[in-house]
Image (cartoon, rainbow, N blue to C red; front, top):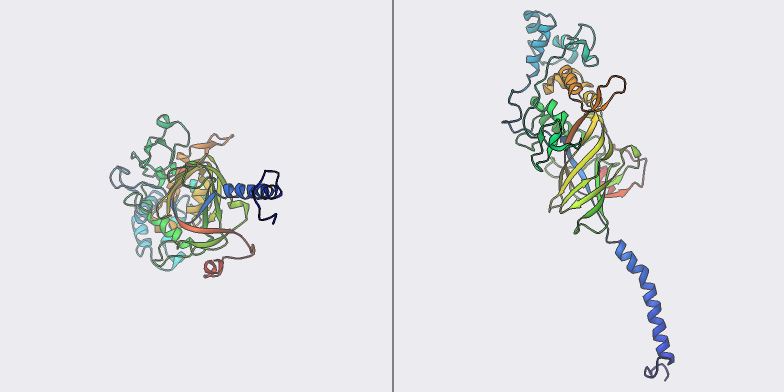
Length: 395
């Protein structure tokens, strides 16, 4: 009878019971409300489908002085300068590039075309600088790394943001090499695209994560991560790009773990300048190591990402990525490697050696294409990237 009667003063037992229950429910709800507020944070993950040199090749303004010679032509020129006769050169190059690898008669000549005995790729200074036609156009992808803007020694303008004083010495060096042009901009340069396409089947995938504490519907600070996965990418049905919405385990190896302070404005993510390192592969470069890293990623409505990452990187590492395969990459890409060595050294624009005063790093930028993915902590650190179906097993 008492429990059915809810009338009466506030001190009535039923009133007191109801008030006590309400207080208890409210108290229990507080941590749930706090959890709900914290769970507003949102993370989007992406797997890199392409990563290649950010070269602005429009075929009109970038290389007004023409392009660098093809391999057979600069071999003829360099061998003549080294003292070989016309008949000797033409006999060696008769079946260029030909079959038979090192047995081809032109190979020992071009490999030692400096002093006649030392490998010119390992010792490029055994020959005089053959000269490299460099980019002299107005535009370049990348960033104003030195912070000087229009007062920067670099005269490049970013074609998308129109930022002035963009520093991209690597593009200046390689932008007029035939195999490092991508038409129309921002087309993929042919050789870097082919090299990356091969690497995707043998190296671990690269994973980008963007965490927005208040969700992606609001501008503000974000955290950006770059990591390697334990699995390779899975290609989509076309075979050209990475398949979207696959799951990858994050490799805990700290050599490729980057946590960057970022900012979200609309659908564009940028970061504060920072150091950056990703293990890559000697087939392209042993690693990508940047000082003063800048990043700009645009997240499209379909969830895909395109962007630019750049900074200063050791030019000797860049050169090694070309020279480790010697004459093979030289003739296949029409890249005069001794000329490249001198050009990289000449255009290095950061980190002077305390003894020689010569800069040890060169400004550069790379374009990124990525698709949505799921990233999870590694559950099996011993997993190796050897199974062609490893990605599907990780889902």
